[in-house]
Amino acid sequence: MKKNLSRIPRLYTTATLAQSQPSALSPDQAHYLGRVMRLAIGDNVRVFNGNDGEWLSEIEQVSKRGCIVRNVEKLRESQVLPDIDYLFAPLKTARLDYLAQKATEMGASRLRPVFTDYTQGKRLKFDRLVANTIEAAEQCNLVCLPKVSEPQKLDRVLDNWDEDENETRQLIFCDEAAQSGSPIETIRQFAGRPVALLIGPEGGFSQRERIRLLGLSFVTPVSLGPRIMRADTAAVAALALLQATIGDWS
Image (cartoon, rainbow, N blue to C red; front, side, top):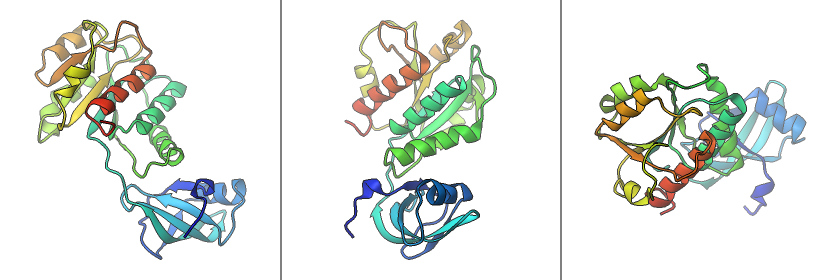
């Protein structure tokens, strides 16, 4: 089936996707397709769910209450993301939206918000965080989503680190106070292993947190260079380093 796929709307769904099977989309998605995109019965939409790949589907029903599509052709299999956890201190709303979107685009496999001593916002809209990962995946042609964890205090995450992993995941700690130098050789030694990346809040890590992190065997500090970056900028820079060195860019 030859179509200009880039012009066909693309949506994430939690429904199971299989050949010729009808799949129900949400009322919000029905509104988007019917009222915003002005699509009707017989028109096409692309759908994916992270498990069953991406499908070209045909609208069978569309109304205010929902939308039914029938899966016509499998376009792509689901992707496997590099095993990279991204740990971050929540930021103010607009910048947190940006951070979630960029971490998704950069291929993080799990987003793990952590509350640190200097985290400014102690509340986090979990559903909004998930919605931003979905929006990024839809717009950037991804066939998978990162998992999003409920927020925890950093100390609790560190306390339970070995219990959470069958094979200890190395935590790459972006430390503003670390001696400046290329992080590439440091990161390269963890090729083929599960890793996590930790970036702190705007105020950085407290001295207490730094002492604790540097005393843990599964933590490796790296510098992101001589300039201080905003947390959302540091996220993009550090994830690019990881992907280019030991991820799926290498």
